[in-house]
Image (cartoon, rainbow, N blue to C red):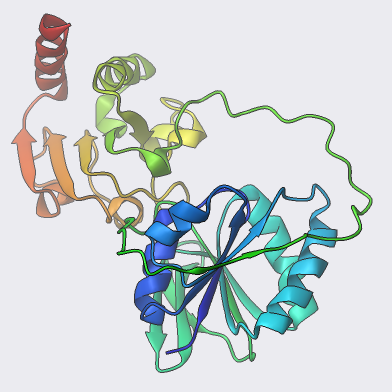
Length: 305
C-alpha cells in the first residue's frame, strides 16, 4: 500500500492520522511541531518529521514543503482543513503540479488511488473525486474521523530545519479564539434546530451545555434565523463533528445536517414531531416538548451542583 503523508504543522489531528493509518495499512509519514512526536507516535506514524515552529510566510513554507515532499517521494498528501492549511495546500499543489480536493468529508482507496469525497453543486450531492496527477492531495474537515490510537511502533523521528528564508510576511501578534474548545474536539454536543424556536431557547441549551461541559451546536436553519452564531453550525456547510454523545434538540434531520454529525457515537433526538427524520438516525428518541425535558435535565444538574 502507498505511503500517506499527513501535514499537521499547526497541531496534530488524531482523527485524520487514524484514517491515514488505516488507508495506508500503517505506512504513515507525518510532519508535526517539535514536542508533538509522542502524540503522532500514538496514532501509528512510521516516520515523524518535526519543525520547531511554523513560518508566518505561508508561501515560503509551501515552497519548502514542496522540496521536502519531492525528496521523501510522497504521492498522497493530506492535511486538516484548518484556516492555515487551506491557504498553504493550494500553493503547495501548484508547486507540485498536483491535484487537490478541498474540504473532504470522506476518504477511501481504490487500488493505489485516493478517492476523495466532498459536497458539490451547492451541497446538493456528494462527489467522489479521483486525482489524475502523480501526487494526490486533499484537505479534510477537522472532526470528520474519530481518533483511534495505535500501538507504538518505534517510529523514526527526523528533525527538520524549516525554510532557510523567512519570506515577506512577519507575524505581529496572535490571539487564541475566545469561544472555548472547538466543536470538532467536543466529546458531548447539544445541538438545536428551528424547533427550539428562539434565541432565548438556545440560551437555555447553552446553560445545559455549560453544566455538562458540552459544546453548543446548531442546524443551518437555526443559524440563518439568528438563534445561534455561525461557529455553532454543524452540517455540510458548517462544522463536521464526531462526539461520543450528540443530543439533537428540535432538529428535523435534514441530510445536510446528518452529514456533519454522522460520526457521532450515540445520538439522542428530542422532537415534537414523531415523523421527524432524525428519529430514524437516533439511538434514542424523545417525542414531546423539548423544553420539558431540557428543564428537567437542568433541574437534575443543578441539584448535583
